[in-house]
Image 1 (spheres, one colour):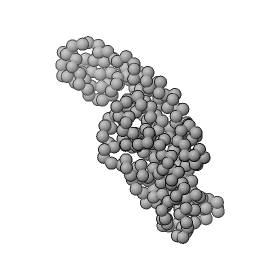
Image 2 (cartoon, one colour):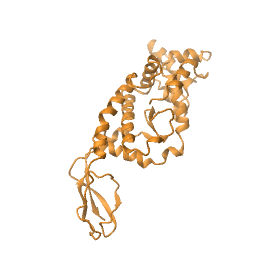
Image 3 (spheres, one colour):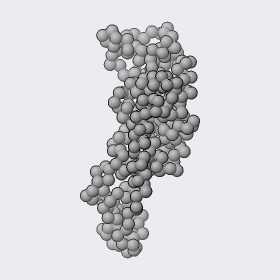
Length: 288
């Protein structure tokens, strides 16, 4: 998630626009839902007000807190450490939430398969998560702006290894969101960035964990991608329906039907077989 340091510092020092949250806030208020959102991200100054009131409620034994219409938004900003993160990523999401981000989505699906086949990550890690491409700029290769969203930079589309490796990095941020909560992650990330002068490298504790995991799994992914290809059992084009074209193993694709010139029909169909390929099932292909 590197590359946002300058924007972060600008937000932290300048502050958020004035906005007053409507309604009351208590200990159990979920501020992501309590504020209006744009592209799934809560409006930053409302979010800051909500978190500030929530903290006050928790400190007072869960006495319901009414909003303060005249409260200085800069005061809210400094009281609420999550706001700089929210303010910065809101701009990223606004730019990245377009139809172009869904182009070449099969390359992202392939990266998820590669991580699974390389025994690096379980594909369920990405359940309920929207992953799309975006022109992130400033050297940023990936960002996880919220618990259900990942953006990968378009520069990765031609590199299968780097796509999978950077997706593995962002998967650690997903785990961090799930462990400490959405508000907790945004607050801790903001504090870490402020503490290291806006760094988004290994000097940031949340990034350090993600980079270390990426370092560990990259050689594993590379070894998987460089493995010898599965060999066909019979190189001819007259195999009948039901004939095996690939023995039980872990092929490059897990599409249900693939063109296969070995088959008389020209098409092979996937079938499960005994074995393990990272997600619990090896496959074989038979002529349709």
